[in-house]
Length: 138
View 1: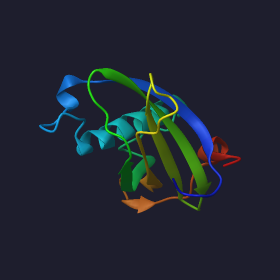
View 2: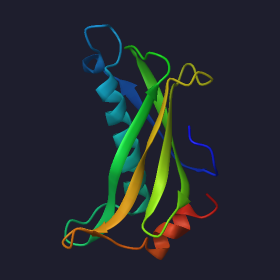
View 3: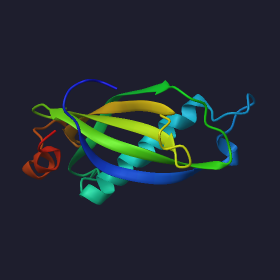
């Protein structure tokens, strides 16, 4: 995970589903991005910063994931979401994925850069004060 200050902002548990598996018998690499997306969107929802297609909201401009230990069905994972330093219109998110029954084993780590945009204008906008408050101390 990237160095620098970061702040834990959300934790989410979800099941590993049978359909998450691939022919090799482990969770497919693309599914990890779904896990990260689900955790990020749930944090946006809980924090009150869901995208408003007629106004403003968060979008990601990149996503990354490092696969450290295979996940297999059955099981349950916990995804921790952290935020890092912010700029004028963007901030970094970081995620850690662990099996609930193996909390000391990091299975994957990843993240995304989030940019605040005005959707109708298709342009970035400065982060609103309420979002900056969520990111404080990161």
